[in-house]
Length: 284
Image (cartoon, rainbow, N blue to C red):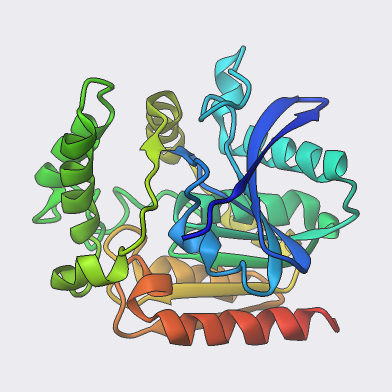
């Protein structure tokens, strides 16, 4: 595997650790509480064949700036941080792609800064709180695997885990969100590894409880591609349908053999869909 180039980008809002790979039109990728490193990210890797991908560690993640105030860990602040990074890199526009909580950040980004985005890709996400809105969500107390998921999340927050322990618990957590859990090793063959920012995760858990931007989705004017696994247990499919109905220039594509990771579970189809969309939006 080829490693990502590490850069430290100084902006008006602090400095950010950014990993860069690929060539072509720029695409920004981030996740609300993941700590990326030079090994990259499976989702971000999807775009590196035809694009210059910027994989961003937000504040309090990796070697990026620490937060001085609690609100700096919010999704809203994350959007302003991404804008500061875009400006520091000298781009008048770029695309944004986000999976899961990264997709939630993408929705807010599109609402407030559509003029900065050539295109927006949202995968397995939602525009409002989902954890206690649907019993099909694994974070809902009525979901049969709710307790085990909570145990795994709390365990992975620990800084005392050995690398092998972290890998084992992370693998179990991911398997809960696969349509074919037995194919885990097939889906995750590379030496890609990342950590979780506990402070960002803890802030998100509170923020998600009051999160709802559905009434603002009509303001999102960027061409938007919404992708969902039909069996997604983290952000159930219904939330993607809702976004597609409320975002004016959007299209929804559903992956029938996927849970939360369609970019791995139906990799070839996912890449075809992404390639077609990005080619078309160049001429919008």
